[in-house]
Length: 369
Ligand SMILES: Cc1cc2nc3c(=O)[nH]c(=O)nc-3n(C[C@H](O)[C@H](O)[C@H](O)COP(=O)(O)OP(=O)(O)OC[C@H]3O[C@@H](n4cnc5c(N)ncnc54)[C@H](O)[C@@H]3O)c2cc1C
Image (tube, rainbow, N blue to C red; front, top):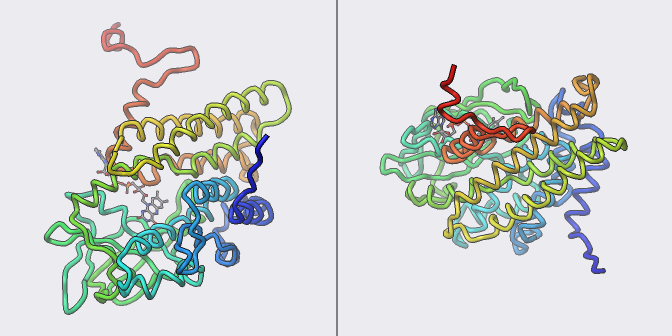
């Protein structure tokens, strides 16, 4: 039998999850992610999991980053979500040209956790709608429009902000995550899930960002060519939440049978989804990625439903982890949703089969009677 020692950051994630995140997840869900949780995440080294070693990161391979994400999301989805934003700017800066001022100034403090970053870029996917316009102005850029979603407000230090120029270029730049001339946050949103992650919208009205804070300029079509396959991948958080829900099932034979059956299928989908995620993006395979993402959603829904059903009426109490995981699962259904993801998921739901094997009615049956 071969045994493999877990990566130190996987061990660290497990320690943080078991010692802090999971025991306080119910409280955090109701009261918000506290600054002390973010402090613990900063100190853990997990913010540098994918950052290059020469900038103070761990340079760990993607399977390690995914396992860490599963552990954190299963323990406290709100804390996972706040910190997961950080990894996008880290990866973008790591891929930028050495010598780029933003890279040299920010990559090390981001990799070591001295700075925590959020992101404001999902709106770029709404093209040809342009919620945020970037315009060249006086040796820098100005941003105008509305960022619909920005998570971690008041917890993170800097944000990676994206806008689209008149020439249909996507520009990513870093700015301080605080109210400033040209940037005004909404009050924190009250949501059915992850209110704790402190999500706001941002009104941008001539926000100035200097040229040396620009991280990337890329034609919008080139952005989409990479973004579409990548956003079709399954988030490790889906497996983390599903697994945490199955852990709630008890010792009775029927609970054990539900847990065993769902865990087996989750493992299979997880293996296939991660194999696809490891394929170079130019190889696309968007349909396969979307099919795995949809299957993972189905299994996560089944897993969180099983935890609620097994828990009975008590599962609906705000003290119950089962209802929290079910709501977190609902959030994951729309997190990172793009038009192809939405379309594939709705198409799969249209032919959804019930437990007795019945699928969607044929058009003739649907019209009958
Ligand atoms: C709680 C929360 C926090 C978030 N935090 C962040 C954050 O910090 N940073 C960030 O960048 N993003 C964040 N997001 C955005 C998120 O990742 C997704 O991009 C977002 O949930 C997609 O939803 P939307 O309603 O904004 O997208 P929409 O743009 O309305 O829709 C998603 C996609 O579906 C397509 N679509 C929508 N309606 C239709 C239709 N009727 N017919 C055909 N196609 C359609 C759109 O074109 C789009 O591509 C957050 C979302 C939530 C819910």
